[in-house]
Length: 177
Image (cartoon, rainbow, N blue to C red; front, side, top):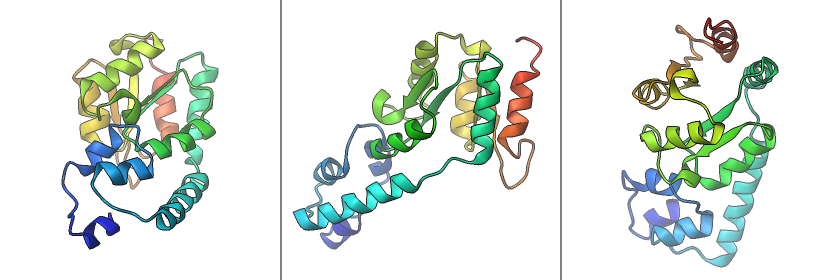
């Protein structure tokens, strides 16, 4: 984006949505946005991006939560608004999930109902039998709830649901399991 600004292209509100709803690498994204990047600079930027993606680590409570829920025999999937290069970090850390609903694969972003429906379909589960958690009320609570999914808002800084271990307890102790 910095290169685009230098070329007179200001970031637009729809840029993030555009980049996260298509399977674009860095070079394709630059081309799509009309940003010219010299090959040497593109190689440097791609190396920086690879290093960033390689450095991504999951929250410890995410690993424990997923492990416990799967051990209880419950299917687990991920539904996430992501640019394509970042999907590799998720699948590297969580290779054995039942479904991956990445916005760049599905072609739409949360809270568009189609991304939730894609994950439900891939998991073979009904909305009313599904829980979802995330750090966006709009995308991870209200969006899913519109389909009948039990959405939960994660507030790591403190709130009703401060961590994923509490979410794990909600799911595992649910009376309708």
